[in-house]
Length: 334
Length: 289
Image (tube, rainbow over all chains, first blue to last red):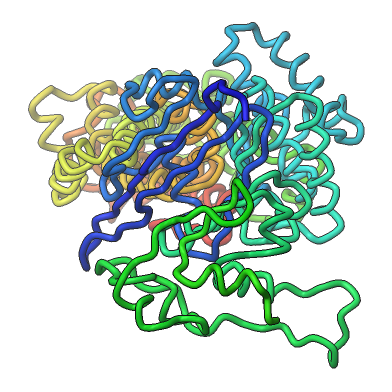
């Protein structure tokens, strides 16, 4: 809304992987913006390219076989794709940090909590071990871990999954990054712990003003945390909207399908049947003619199979969708 | 001693006791090795005399109350020689375990992490592995001359490929672990990742491998001494004593018997210790037997 350029501007990003069977276009023409303090959710099913997008942002696509083939990633005016590996190391953890899906295996079993959190602090802020330890304690208090003093000298196997995830978050935030990439942060946790972790992330965002790039397939998490949502399918962005708009009036059949497949509280067996999306994500080995979703789409018409739809602005100012029939979806029949 | 320390380092304190109870191999093996180490260190105070002292009067003396293990071909005390021989065997075992593991660790870490180094180093290792370790050691010693130091170096080189392969395979699986990725995403430089995140996690299997190397080094040293390519004849080593007693085995079997028992005892102890450690740490880890 302001004239200020966004914190992060990803434009036309393309990522390819060379495999034995040919080149997979994991991400094509992928663009988004992230403002300071904002939470953007990237939603998609397994294999849709959402994690590749996050890894590309950190420049962690293994080359070979992967390659960032085109596009640019502007962070505070610098193109991350032109930085040297050493400059990138400076940035990782310090400006852009990441939390992972599997908290139990994302901590090194032979290092104590204090050592793990302190590592990045010592690395980026050039402080001594005692200061790093203090910072670790501060972070443990911030993530509301019980008995933080005792936790400092514990090893990961002495902690539960939820506690490990809190430690991961403490690690990621220890250098006060401006962007936190959260790759399915709650998938491996059970439901009550999920809620606690989501509250925690929400709370931290309010307090530290960290921008969050949330990668998930869970629309419940999205509704809870996100400001804006971006739906990705077969390596392409197909819809983007503020969270409320997207949940209330999706303009892409895929988004509609995702919403239909989500159980609702209070629904009984007779009243609503969950609808599934037939078929699977198409292979990204061959170029896809037309809309990638067309074979699975109940709205598809002849045009969808031959001509790929471009992102078009929908009714709401910040609502974009790539579907020929998005206007027909605007008057919901279901 | 060393084993007990390492156990409490790797495994948290409270479970250490359970391990000793649940793994008798570990306890028995450690005790046997400790006895051997004690004999080596305390050799001068264990009722021994100068192992080089030649007393022609005692030639081929059968074991009695004065000469517990009898006398050898030129009347030296077999008991004293066997006890002092433990020094050579254990020094070689320990020296080879340390040198072999250090070298193999460096090779393995680099091969596991840097793919172009991998193809070069592992081919060299394959080449080394193709040569039987005893032949390789004999060749290296005939190039450099027999001395304790050269024996250790020669056997170490023969053991490096095994360690390197083990470390490489562990590193290959470790570098895919999420915590290594997590370390990369927090901007940790390459060297710290290798030393702080990968290396400590290779130590448990290496400790187990170390005991097998120790045992095999003790044996190889004895074999080298037996065929006259190892420790110089002036230093008593179990291989030397057995080699010297071989010609009179039919009339004085004790000369071969006692150092043979000492050798079996030590190797068995170290192997038991290794098996115990392996079972305690990682039941899935299949060692070379």
